[in-house]
Length: 176
Image (cartoon, rainbow, N blue to C red; front, side):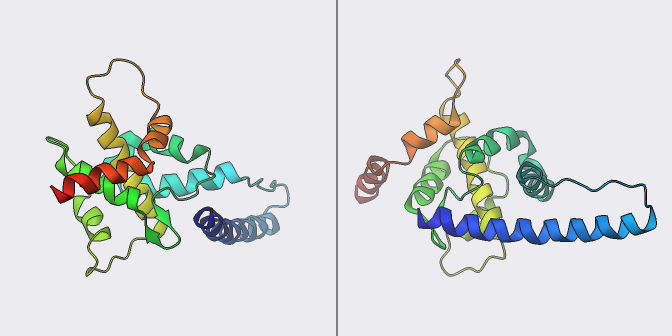
């Protein structure tokens, strides 16, 4: 819960700053053209802007955009793969499982590897890192369920994935 609150505060501040910049730009346009109308800003536009920026930078992941964004839909863009400022155990489990999945091609593998290398430094924002991991989750889930013909709810699967029996399972396989 603390993670959600922290991320929400950070995200809210970034929305405020970007909104302020848009209002300033809008006001400067209003002084030049008195007949122009003010821009209405809402949180959906800000969420779309964040996701659009992310998927512009990581264009190889665009095909996963709607699935990734559906994971954040009920979280108001709160992080999934972080507790406080640390990557959580579920992200580590996902990373291990994805790396062991045959024939899973992972775009931006280098960036993801750096997230789990304690000696490496990365310049990824927490938001970008979380969305990269969410994209990895979607790729892993698609590959794991490729034989299923029914429509898969990635959000429901995520709830099943993010339980402590998943962590225990991985711990057992690491010990063997």
